[in-house]
Length: 186
Image 1 (tube, rainbow, N blue to C red):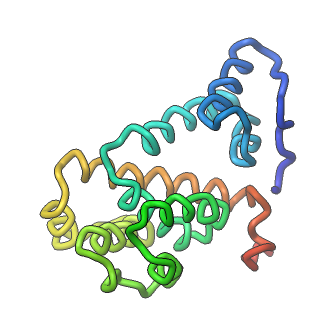
Image 2 (cartoon, rainbow, N blue to C red):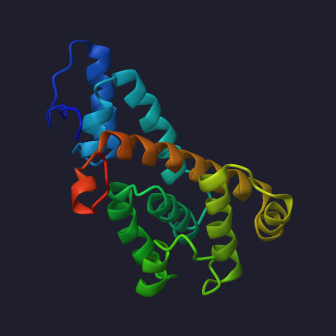
């Protein structure tokens, strides 16, 4: 990483900051991951991040496969390989996409034609939000035809959140993925 990681069991200067560490550890099952050890340089940022991503990851109505195809596609498009490595196993476990379909998520030209309609439109929507930010009306109409308003908000929030996550991970090279995946950071 481009900054030093916070220690595995940090002792913060204030009770408030230590409480933040404990909340993050609780969400992670007791152990900080490299992303947490980067974010904890700013405990208030880490606290907000933890709360927001907890809602995105565990409190929406989306199926694992819909949520994770969006997250993995964002990771692939943005070369956020730490994100990819952490979310592909969840996508695999969902049992909806085979290994070839998961690997195909790395191909920027993949339009999802090998996927069912719901997963294909989520892939296309993720591409629009990630690569250009503008979502054309025909694509939005396809998404809206397949998902409820609540699901559209949750899909959109998931894609937006993981674009934020990926940009943080890549900019700071969290998990030292640039070298492993041959990302040119020069």
